[in-house]
Length: 138
Image 1 (tube, rainbow, N blue to C red):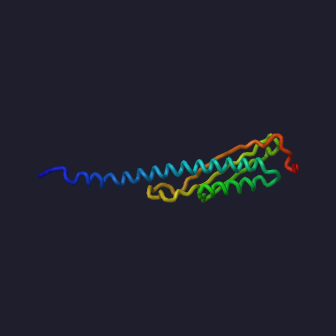
Image 2: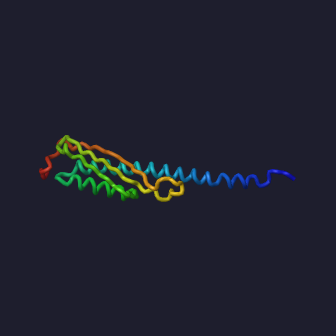
Image 3: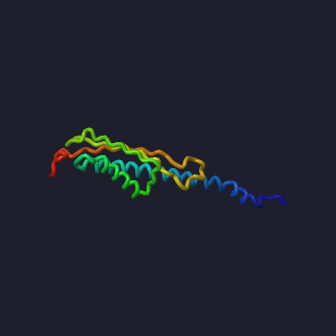
């Protein structure tokens, strides 16, 4: 008796590792996409906060806002670099925030790929034209 008995089991044993790797790859792609969105959102919020605040501590406020947004989103950065360009800080001017985060990709190490990925984002906000100067108490 020569039949196909047991061939389905053999196929399942051969295909299971490939299917698991495919699912892990989908998870990795999803995490990278979410991390990119979270870093972009944090950069936008930091730029907005820096454009609203009056005084010389706009860089500190932007950094705190970016860190708080990333923490709230659950993004863990091994290395977080924030650059704030406020050289044009005047009514009608702009504030630019550049954010780079080395995102930890825990849980997908079985793929044998990197356990972190560098994600960058930039955001520019316009300072309100009709607001007072930085020293104005209005």
